[in-house]
Image 1 (cartoon, helix red, strand yellow):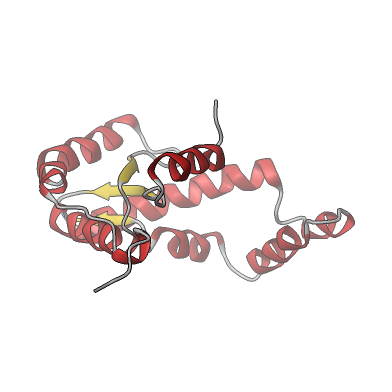
Image 2: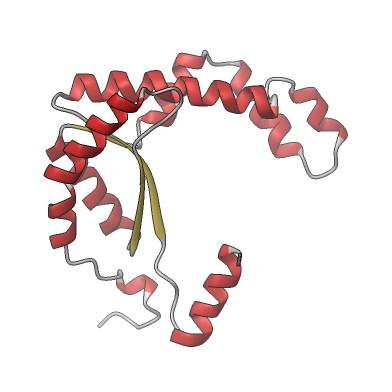
Length: 165
């Protein structure tokens, strides 16, 4: 499997322009903004606990012993100052959550800002039950996806390598 950097290099050699970026978003698309937020935060906290169990960022001192791992040491120290709920809310806030209209607007705005040419969405975080994830995905597919397909998604001039007129 080729790495992203190899793919981007190949793109720039063959198309002589920058490869469009890929937008990856956690999606919580529900009938109410409150349900979307509560669901996303709850399961984001769960996912973070899994990451913590694997990487043990909370044991930040151990990273200081390895050259090149200063970022992880500082990251762990920063996490120590926040509760899991605060970290979950911080990580959930920029994601695409809300009613179908809100999710569409958030994804549209991020695409316009970044020039993303590809969208990868994740409908299940942490220990979210399959039925909840399915409901999330079905509402997104019915109410948001058709509208996303209709969007004109040109790259911003700053990303095309062509001077603005």
